[in-house]
Each structure stands twice: as structure tokens, then as C-alpha cells.
Length: 226
Picture 1 (cartoon, one colour):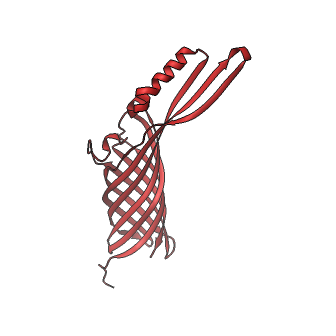
Picture 2 (cartoon, rainbow, N blue to C red):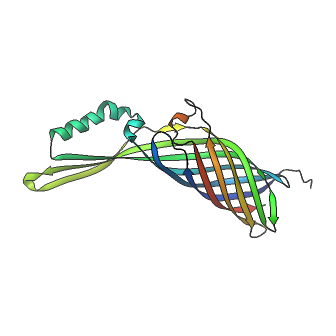
Picture 3 (cartoon, rainbow, N blue to C red):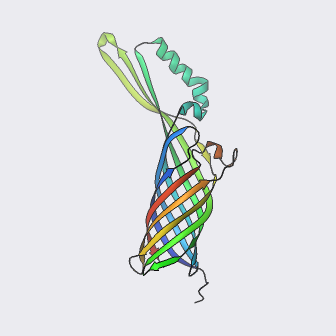
């Protein structure tokens, strides 16, 4: 076979951890976990192209989260109701705790160099680009209590009050390196490190509501070799 003929080299299943670096929008803490699938297509003995897709779940905390969200129901109606009800009744108390999550689906195409270090051990530096589809979600965990002093009883209840989602699909650039070790002719272990930069497109593709500018992405996986 001609060494330049493209062929599927492997399919990798991986799990990953994300640590964003430059945070935005007054986000104080954020991290994510996830996983995905990557298909590697060998183009030459020293070069391959990979296509990956995955899912990540991020947990984040944001200063003044409710005000930052621009939640119209809260701003126009609900905040006033809470204030009025608790001010009118000293035996009624409310604790409001905002909780935020973000679902992320990155789709990335990379070009990889293939450098064989020893029998079964390959180092793959890479560079690529893609798009990240995201949905940010926030809800208020509301805990209410009403004291009935005459009966020496406190009624308690809690619920989740969901805000509208924020969505988008900003573009990204990626660079990194993978280390691949062949265990058998059909299976290898892989670990990888990537730096991902979100392309700044203010006012477009949901970038204005995206919570970070860049991240470190670490993954481990199993490669099924063809």
C-alpha cells in the first residue's frame, strides 16, 4: 500500500478534566469533567488528522450571579415579592443560593505529528481548531421557613427556581501533545495535554456570555487500533 494513502488508524475513548485559566464575567471558580471519542486518520507515516467530539460538565461560581444573569423574571417581579413577603412577616425567612452548571460539546479537528520514540511509544504534538457548543444553566435553590410561635412549630420547604438558559457556539484553537503506548497490536493507552483558546468574538456566537478565555485540558483514554 502507498504510505501516503489515508486510513483510519485508531478510535479513542477518553475521559477528561478541564481547568479554565483566564475567567470572565466575575466567575470566581470553574472546572469541568467529561469524556468523548476521537477518530485518528493516518495520512503519512509521520502525520495524522484527528476528529474529536465530546461532552463536558462544568461547575462554576460567579460573584453577584443573579444580577450578572440578567434574569428578567427575577428583576421585574420575583425579587420584589421576596422582599415584600419577608419584610411583612418577621417569622418568614428565605435563603436563596444560586447554582450554575454548563454543558459543553466541543468538536475539534487536529493535525498531529507522529514521532516514534521506542517500540510502542509515540509522541504526538498537535494543533487544531473547532467549535464549542455550550448551554449555561442557573437555578436558585430556595429554602424557606415559617415559624408559628404559638404552636412552637417551624414549617420548612425548598425548591429550585430555574432561570432562562444561555447558549452559544464560540470558535476555539487548540494545541497540545499526546503520549501513546501500544499495549497490544490492537490496543494502546493514551494520555494528553491540551491548551484551548476561545476565539474572542464579542456579540457573536455566544462569546459574550461564555465564562472563560482559555483552559488546560487533560485526558486519558484507550485507543483501539486498526
